Image (tube, rainbow, N blue to C red; front, side):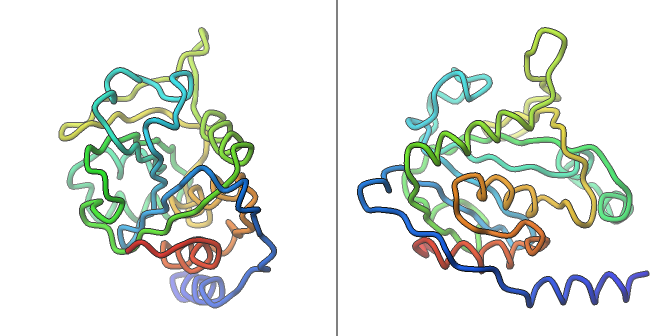
Amino acid sequence: MLPIVGVLIAFISCSSVEKSFSASPKETNKKIYIVNYGFHTAIALYHKDLPEAYLPNYKFFSGSYFIQIAWGDKDWFILENPGTSIGLKALFLPTRTTMRIEGFSHRNPKDFYGSVDVIELSVSHASFSSLLSYIQSTFKRDKYQNVIVIQKGKTGANYFYETKPTYHLFNTCNVLTAKAIKKTGIPISPLFSITAARVIAQVKEYGVVVK
């Protein structure tokens, strides 16, 4: 099974997507940052751009300059040392996902600790709203329509929330990031976004390389 998976990932990694996105300079007034941590990608937004209704625990993040949003396998994401068995389970068996929302006080997008690449994307207000609506749609909610908090992070300004997507080899954290980016109108292909490298390779065609 592993050789087959390797071939599939190699095929996906070498595939390309159609380049058809262009935004009028008058419309490019919201900034989005795609952050690559090597194996994992996240979306960073300016705190000031987020309406309170779109950010759970809004007051908790009041001191943050950037808000970073990422999805991942629930067990892997929350545990400090998840181990190989949990990693393999996350890839080869459908598992539950979580969203981590984390606040950062630094003001330079280059300064996300541990980041390998940071790409700046400029999108219209309408595209930005579509992104926020998509992020909202991935939350699981209780019978009162409140988002479900799993736990507060043990370090830093972050919370983990229950989310709807199922995690597996073809719906990784990077695929989930790509699905969110696509809502802005940028023609990224989630199918070709299993790896962080493929996400970055696609979005850099439509943005500015910050790091």
